[in-house]
Image (tube, rainbow, N blue to C red; front, side, top):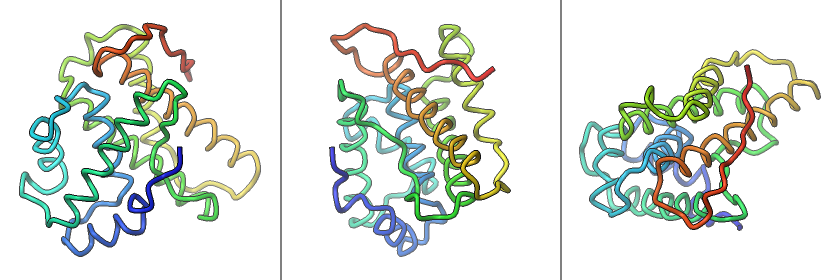
Length: 191
């Protein structure tokens, strides 16, 4: 599934800057996906207000930015519910330095955890596998940004990105809307 042209990170960043909202696009996407995976009500009124609280102290967004966020939401829901697991976190392209991509993953995971915690305040009562995944994500959120530009570090980042992707899908399967396929998603545990 190709990314919608309007969902490109640079366009979202420009709209956030124009609205004077000091968040990176990966933080917005992470929070939005966290809300969705936490089981936020999927009507416009259900998910918009919690996201606005996280992004802009509950204040409305300029129309252009709001339209981009709505597209981002629709894209995330579509990808999360895709049986082929077409979802992946919004992160910088491979051309970016590894340290920037590691930092972006950390920001995405931090925002994801914040979003999911708002909708699921009793995460500590979730099934054990979900609690373990949340714990592993909290460790990923604290990953070191100072990494070497080598193949080993690149491979480690790819592994963390895949774990994060599967963890989001697992949380969506647990807390999101009911789906036909009750097959559990195995993301493995990093311990």
